[in-house]
Length: 270
Image (cartoon, rainbow, N blue to C red; front, side):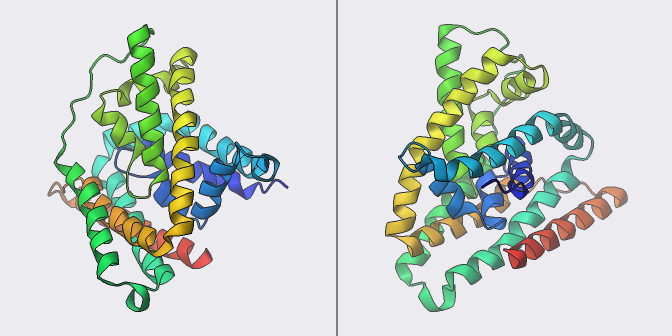
């Protein structure tokens, strides 16, 4: 049965995936659909694919439409209001932490090994803040054999990152120097490049979702600890710095609190 609310959930995930540093997996956790999302992606290649198909179709419609329609808006916001835009997502990420801590019942269930896993997740993501990848100024617009291979594997690795809360798929594309190529392909509707990257993303989704599903079922508390660490570490990646100007500070503080309260509200709804 199709739940059309998943279109809006997909739009929220798709919007976040456009922005380097913000993870679609984090938004899925925030919306309360992370487990269902992982199970659906993993199950689409099994005999039970019909059960997962409606969920993935509606979610995919939302993600695809958000990426196509909002890529221009997000580019504009990041160019004109870079710090307030990032502070909004910073608030969203900060607001999800109380929800995760409550869901994992950290005070009662976490032991030393869980804290260690949480620190590993934190260090893994927070260390990315020290990477300053240089974007290739001229995006790839025509395909060669080498660029097909490179874009496919970049898409596959980025999709694996998208499934993990805290790790941004767009940031992985940025590290590989193809983020501008992807955004340019979407905004100009360069179908050959979109198809190559899309094939990589689909392959990465299916492969990594099976591993994540297995770990969530076998070691749920350890995965919760890792996810909390990943999300906490992403705060350091998304933090854009703050230019001392009254309007900028006012907008950034407002965006931070707005994002935080949106996350708290969605967490309660979930």
